Length: 130
Length: 187
Image (cartoon, rainbow over all chains, first blue to last red; front, side):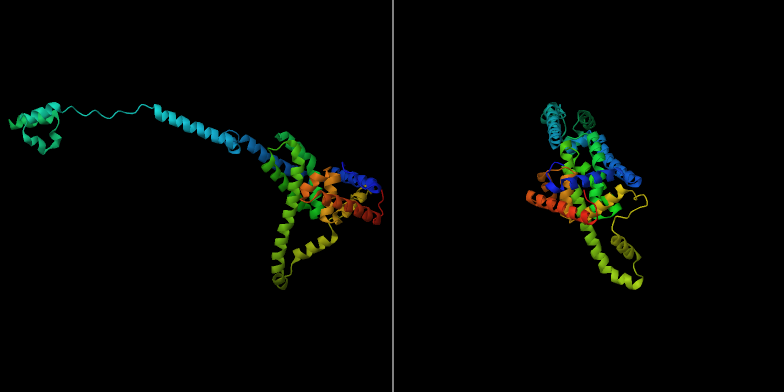
């Protein structure tokens, strides 16, 4: 009781509060067990929250969550920048073939079938024609 | 932030008084226990990360809101029951309604055989007088004198001005004194 009560009723308030305090100490077992069950149910929710730390803990701390996300994005960016890119396949050197075509060493039939534009096939065609 | 142990100690300390708060307001044992359970769950779910020192006020506020919610739901339920009850009365009568009327007429204080000792008689009278107080007066009295809240805290919990809290608690004390005197219980 931290508040002043009307002077002539001070003892009354004291008696009422004293009786109420005594009353809650004599609650029946059924009520007490139900109150205990209520408390355990509430605390089990709390324990479940604490047990769900780790990833779930981030949910309750937006600053941590956004920092983690930013770190993840930066890491991904660094990886993209520094990852060795596969070079495009080198195009075959066809200069010798071009010279042979221009100088007439190869027949024009070569142009009829572009699959012949490999050294092996061209040589085979040339052999056939000659 | 309150530790789980602090929360457990707090709930263990406050649960009996919370039950009585709800019982004086609702006058029904099981509903009062349900209200206390709701209040505990809400405190843990929403305010477990608050400092331990803030828990008493938060809990009282949640408890009062839960009591209000109970009455709000009861009003809606009663509305539908009243709407349907004429039809049910014609058909088969409504024993549940009659039982509940009888129970409410008796009041929630039903002296058991064990309540024959003087202390229990006093307790019964005081609880009866308390439960007969207007809700706001009872709330102010219990918060200030039983829970030990100051005027500012009580005002915040009750959602009214500090002056109103003072008025309610003053009237509650006077009304209690009058009622207990009528019952033959004098300090």
